[in-house]
Length: 257
Image (cartoon, rainbow, N blue to C red; front, side, top):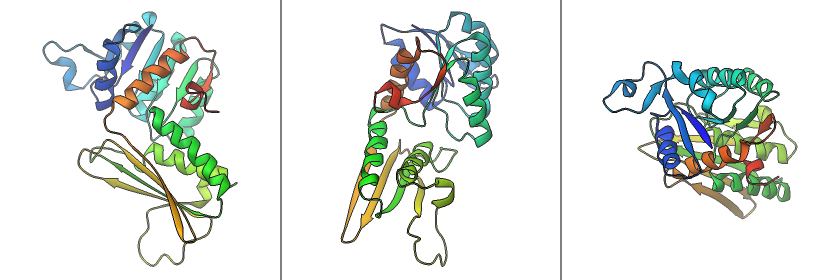
C-alpha cells in the first residue's frame, strides 16, 4: 500500500516515517513538509516541499497528516481532488473546520482522531461505560504534555470530556471548565474539569478522575513514546484504504463501537 506523509519533519511525522519504511506492506510515495521548512533543503533529505504533494497523490492510496489545522485543510482539499483517503491526527480544529472535514468525508474516506494509540481508544471506551454506571461522581481530567505542544487542552483530553459529558446526557460546551482561578465557589454538580500541564519532554499522559463519597477511581493512560501513536496511524491507513467515503475514527478501526 502506498502512503504519503504530511508533516514528515515533525515529531509524529518522523516516527511514522521510521515505522512505515520498515513495514513490508507499505511503500512511502512521498514525505512532505511546508515549503519553508529548513529540513527540506538539508543535504540527503528525503523530505519534499508540500507544493509537490498533489503530483505524488497519483501514486498514493492514503495520506497521513499530523500537522496543524490550516495545513490539514489544504491537504484535505487535495485529497478530495485526487480521490485519496486521509488519516488526520491533527488537533485544534475549530467547529467550522470540523464542518469542512465532515463535508469532505462525503466524497472520500476520512479518519479523524485526536489520538491513534490503541490504549487511549480503549480508555475512551472505559470512560464511556464507567460514567454511565456512576453518573453522580465528579469528573475531572488532567493531561500532561511536552513544553512544545501548541494547543491546550489536548485533543485527547477534549475527546475524553466530550465522551464523559455525552454519557451523562450533558453538552460539554455547557458543563466544561478549563482551568480554575480565584474564588470559584463550590463545584457545580454537572461540571467537568479539564486541566493542562506543559513541561519538559512528556509524550502524553491523561488521567480521568471519577470521585464520589469516600472513594475515587483514576483511569490513566501514559504514552512511553510516540511509537504507539504512529503504529496506530499506520494501522488506520491499512484499514481505511479500501473503505467507502465516510467519516471514521479509531473506534471503527478497533471495532470498539
